Length: 90
Image (cartoon, rainbow, N blue to C red; front, side):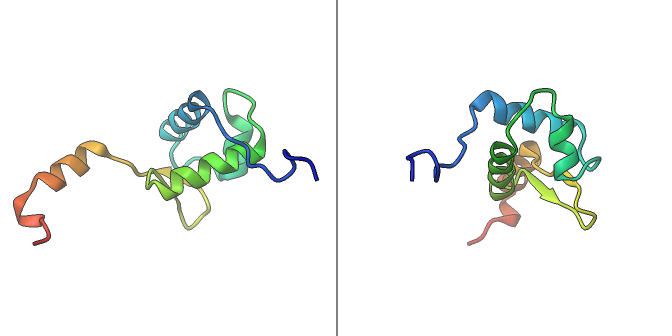
């Protein structure tokens, strides 16, 4: 087996940002495959899947009950929430 046969596709930072921006702009419009087909740049599907897994694990996106990809990350709300003393775990 060759060294590249089992290796994962590592997306570049530019590719990750492009996918993030596209999802943010089209939140809730597309399922995964349709979203991949409409990206502004061509991306290998395996690489796209790696990005989606990263975004799910990092809490930036969620897949709704209809299978559509939604942007859920809100850093301003997170900062506001974490700054509240009454919501801190003691």
